[in-house]
Length: 398
Image (cartoon, rainbow, N blue to C red; front, side, top):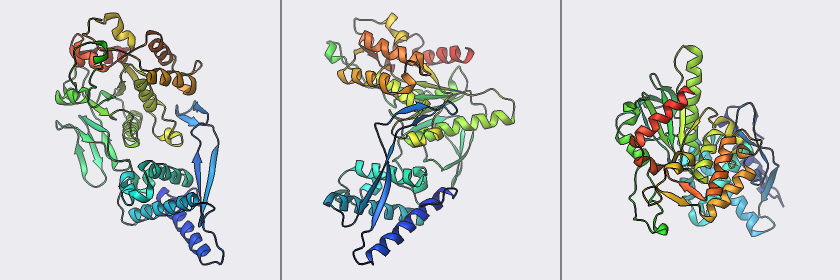
């Protein structure tokens, strides 16, 4: 077992070395049966919001799964073999001091692993068993999130990097950013989508509408320097965020608090803009409280101070043009099922939970049987940028 108070990477090395030593000893012993035991989180456990750090955490049970060689079944032998294979690839990455993606691991032997999901789950179980973040394994998901803004990032190997040069950049993996310079930054805005969706109007007999880029639009107009609300930072996780995106926002949030303790300055405001639909609400909850899939990591990734900028159904329904100018879309069966599940299972949306307004929004969606895309803001007074500025100003002064 890895030493609890060791440096994360040292704990990983200790775990792998002890395991491989044990496996070799068993293989050299007559009738030896080498094995590996991994902790597995139960997906159907119970969850709660930690009152101290505002993170979603699991209070359910965990399973200890043991796979041996040659095993009682072909499946058990395969699980043992792929576990050793993934650990060997992790060890190689650590020895070469490189970071690999889960996809890289999978494509080392796709036929043997069977699917990307097998590798993803195994990597998470290994990290959970050792008690470290996935970054300590030198494994990260392929880069997904994007950012642009009037601030500087101090990279571990490249010095200071300006992310406000007119183009967005891929959000670096956790651990690659030593420091951030947010001097003069007034706001951080998380946008759900990089590009707009093709509006679902065909089923309503309405003219097809074109794709409208939300994040791209804001980056293209350099909203992060031209905003009437002051200079800021734009971020998108392209839908449900990966861990790198969540870790980056948390690093900005922590940097804000550290700087406020050392000097007198105006605090940056953290906002999020999502579609008014169940997925948008769930994405917002993931940023603020964390995800059920990574409950053991949420306390290091959640952003408790993020504010809901929009989109609310009430923002648009009263002004909706039912002749087809506005994208009011009926909920699908999947939408309704997801909304009901969130109300029932996610403590953030519980009747006695911390987000009464979120709960009411979901209930209103179900009652009206409508969802709204953020693309509707293009048609509002002042356009997308004008709407964002007005609502930032309202929330900053409230």
